[in-house]
Image (cartoon, rainbow, N blue to C red; front, side, top):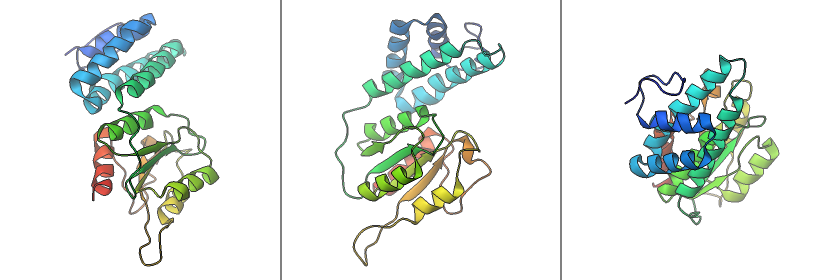
Length: 222
């Protein structure tokens, strides 16, 4: 484990964070890709994200916040390479299974997609079909996507409280489809720090990646 590295306040984290941080600060694409690939293969996606990638991203974020917004390029560089590593690590797209698909989207005006990308990859890793719609999906488009796919679960990501929308989550949770007498509704997961203080009664709010994966598995594998 490492308590320092590359001028970033990493804290008490896995040793791999030091290498990832150094590669990111050097803008060394080849080294960063190799370090991310190794971490995902050695530890698995959930542990690599939670114990290697997230602490490094947080350290880079603290660095630019305390440096007059210097190092923004490092954060963008690291995020882009993490996104690419997730796509390479995830298995091929899993075919839809009736009543098992999960829809993932950022709420309107929200563009922080990386946490949803890792959730999509983790679900695909477990053989669960996913439809990923990325950042700032308009309300009408989200509703249309849910109606067209009939998902078992819908994950809505909000990074800030200004984008989290309780009425939107409630509206999606109330949607129904299927034949009369066998109507179904999706389980809506309110994901991300933006939902803090805006808990929607009856809707799960997983605290992290592992909890979100478990929540989806619990309804998709019934």
